[in-house]
Length: 184
Image (tube, rainbow, N blue to C red; front, side, top):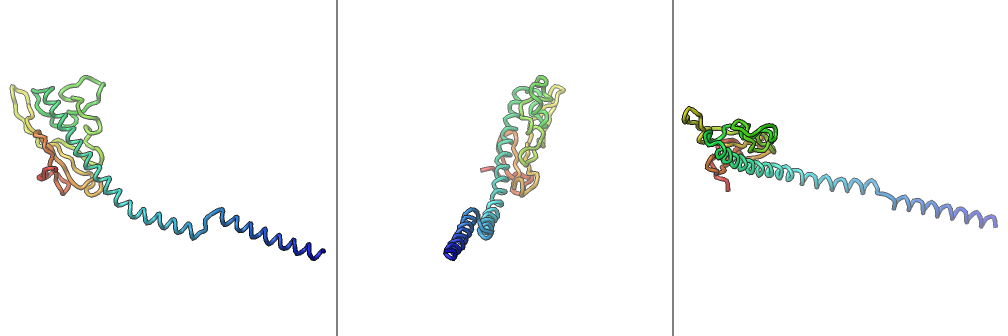
């Protein structure tokens, strides 16, 4: 009887160890499984990151085009409000903090603040090539060109853009201000 009891104890201890081992295995992942999952994630990241960069620069270009349209609309509003001045020749003239003082020809408050600083969404904006005439001893700007160039060509954008008082947006495929191609 003692021998049968001893065999039963040994048998039960082997079974309990086997059950403990099974429970530990089903409770987690093996090192090999974790390495395979990490490898798959790494491969997916290597595929996705270049596409993300391309999408970001494309979004910046779209933002630059919309910002040039906003500058054009602000110029029309400025010319209508201050006809003796014509167009504005700086972004700061179109901008200005709303509510701090009344709009004026030097701070018209018709352009959003972030765009009036000249930097937005990876692009640098400027108003250049202003043509000035003097009428009744007052300077009047009769034409202008607004430009948008990427801050880092190839990273924040690929093309440069321009718009003038006619409202046609043109592109420079090299990322500069030599805008010769009409935007399609």
